[in-house]
Length: 98
Image (tube, rainbow, N blue to C red; front, side, top):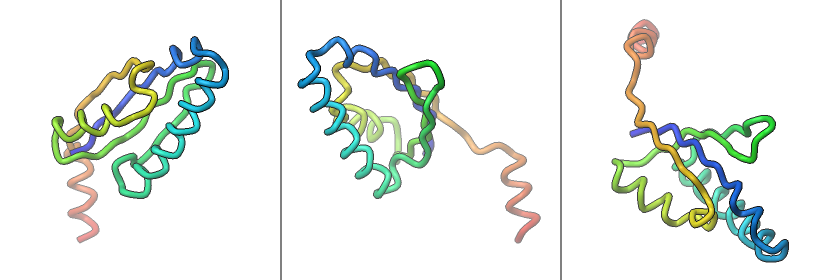
């Protein structure tokens, strides 16, 4: 199941510089792991903001919650989750390629 995740990690910038840098470093490393396993499928920066939006994949909302809880930035982030469903046009395109 895919989810659109809007993550605003602005509060991490309230931390002392050394602590912030360590959290960000761990977050980037963890994000690379999530990308390698296919959980984090796409991610985009939001110009003029410290947030991002991404497409994440998990078996269900419970599994996604576990993944989000594992993020080093989680204590400093506001996260909005939107479940996604396949659009009929996507199915039609796949059928026409068949």
